[in-house]
Amino acid sequence: MPSTPALSVLLVEDDLVFQETFVRVFALLGEEWEIQACPDGASALAALAEPDCHYNLALIDIGLPDISGIDVIAAARLRLAELPIMVTTAFTAEETFLSAIRAGAHGYLLKGDTEESLAHSIGQVMAGQYPVSPALARHLFRLAGSPSAMPLSNGVSLSRRELELLQLIAKGSSYANCAEEMRISLSTVQTHIRNMYRKLEVNNQRQAIVKAQSSGLLGF
Image (cartoon, rainbow, N blue to C red; front, side, top):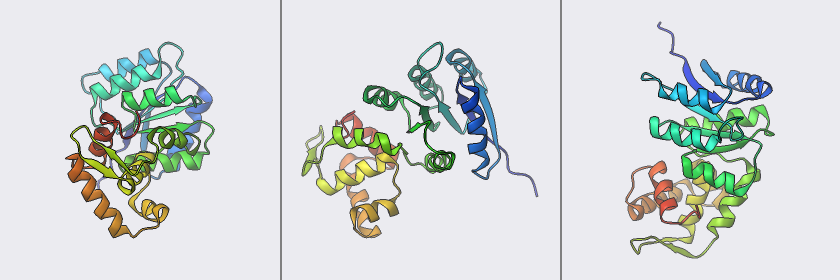
């Protein structure tokens, strides 16, 4: 049988210790990964500028020695619109967190997380979820608040439960975890999802989160 092609990750990280950490993290995932490590923003931008560049995932540090990782995230999003992008950083400041998400990051992980936790989060983002380190999730909830209903720019409102579900999805929770967290059945979660998609006029999670962000529902 033909072998399964290796998955490719763009790792933008100047610290050799953390480069080695991510080699071990990807070894935990099971699939074969090819890691292209860039020690600074300039080399990452050069890699993204290659005409035949293709990556299955990008892991980008914010604190690079030459330019901000935010700029690299924005460039990666512009070059490869569907590329899953995860921030890996020691920065916990709210403004940095929000800037990364605005630039196009799908997840935000802290370097202090365990290797097992990082591997789990990478698996989540590859499955279309939006993982955020627990220490940072409070930013989403603080900014979003918990009103009974939140209006969209077109006058349509999401219910409190729909908004709560959207917040959990933005944090990276699966539907099953949402059901457990909200203490409702999986079928009820799916009903809320269908209603949200209809109100937001979208077809998937990514579109729902982007639309909610642009409408101010998630506070960033």
